[in-house]
Length: 107
Image 1 (cartoon, rainbow, N blue to C red):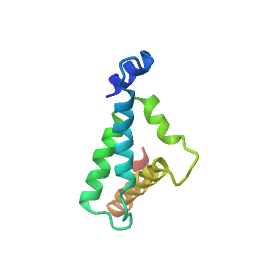
Image 2: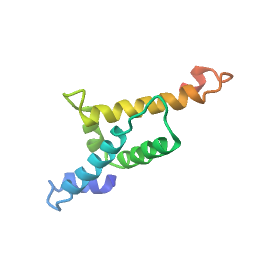
Image 3: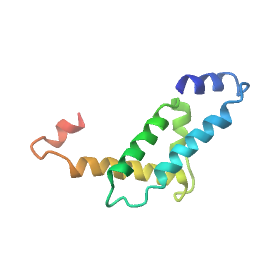
Image 4: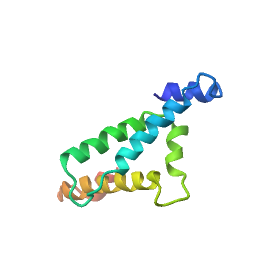
């Protein structure tokens, strides 16, 4: 996916894959953003968040950078990032091992 994004960017969009790539990225972020119950994440919801996060991560850095640029905090992009953040915190806080120091985990 990253190679396709790079080739599309380098060619100035001549091959015409930009719309398809944008659709794939938008679908992945919308799916993540649609996760409603962040307080009681189910295994299915976590699986969907992870799968869609892998899809997003497959894009080139130039494309994924667009996720962090938004002016409306209620946008799908902002909601997507909030869900990823909450899901990450859920995994860290719910299943953390108190015997492992926080500094070790951060490293």
